[in-house]
Length: 326
Image (tube, rainbow, N blue to C red):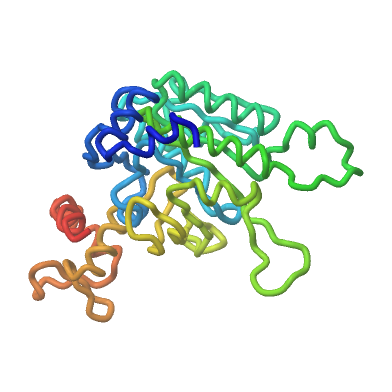
């Protein structure tokens, strides 16, 4: 053992912390362990906000995964609109080349203030996200999507060549770097992924492309699945999407729910508030009848009940009660 090693062994606890500060920078080991409450910004979908703990937290990565037409991109764009309301910059990394500016505008996104970047491969995505985070000025980065992004080597290869590992390794490197950068800036990242099926095998064959690193490094993972059409399948006015919070480091996980998305470009958040209020015992349902506070004033039908609460301006009051129950 060297003389230096012997001296290090003789340090007491406080001296060791001071030595670490001297070696790695002031505050490295001696800063107090006080943790501020996590700031959150709404996703624009009340049911999701309630399930994940009050909205998308800053400094975190949220993965939205699911089947086609389940509302993944729509939820991301609704979140983008909420960030813009807070005057935060939003960057949309569109490797799908499928962003519809008209639909984004309908959902409330100001396209003149949202930068759209279209990289060709995952290594470009990684460098782009890291560079944007280093500015400290971007509030939300949306990456759409992992499943449709090749690695540079895959892009250069012939389709006849077998590619093993795909984007798994570059994704792992990217996630390690950006999660470290996120701790120092007031930013959030939404990663969109698509459901795939393994060839052969037994049991559940569903999986998410991109390797395991994305699952480990994501703070929140939301699975979406399409449900019923609103207004009937022949002439729908919207659709229902079911969700499950598969992972949540910022609130209790495994919560489930659903939300109603209308093609006019809005989510029925009032209905979601009422659904949560019924589950929490704030509003009440007996058969097909609903009431709030006064059992004598029952309303038949959920939609009629929601409309009555909106007309009487009770939704905000009920929302506060629901959030206080959280």
